[in-house]
Length: 214
Image 1 (cartoon, helix red, strand yellow):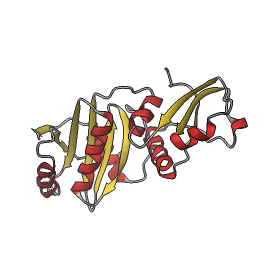
Image 2 (image 1 turned 135 degrees about the vertical axis):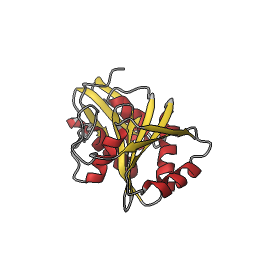
Image 3 (image 1 turned 30 degrees about the horizontal axis):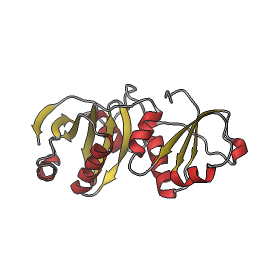
Image 4 (image 1 turned 45 degrees about the horizontal axis):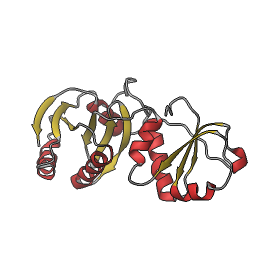
């Protein structure tokens, strides 16, 4: 079932699931429409629904040209990636920039999956574990921006302790000049007001020193 290139219509009744889908769509720059009624559904395209909305649609005559994609909390990452044509992920890469917060982006191959800021290393590790569990990539690489200021030293100790036995790769990346414009070589959002998130993107796409497979 080829989903790319087709218009996406989204009917998700669970507000938390819809919030997650909107966030992922923002990262991936996936465009979609929300129908106002059954009569406003297009004749062709992809209809994205959760279980609750699907039950409401059962018994109604839907346009035959609509393909149904069902989302749930345990498959939303996989299904959203499929909507943009990525069915199997080779590597998940996290780019991390340190400051007052732990700023990060997460790529699934060349697709921007998530971005944000957390206060604790454990929050980032939890997110990475959830992503790995959801999409089952062949490998996970965490790239940490380093600078003469040495902000990374305490963070790395906490990160390595948190990831012990996880088989994640850790890389150190020179963060000099990373707060400039984001490159155009990946799929997803490229305009950020936050320089720390810009830095995370550039860190994730740079090569550096492989520290360990932990």
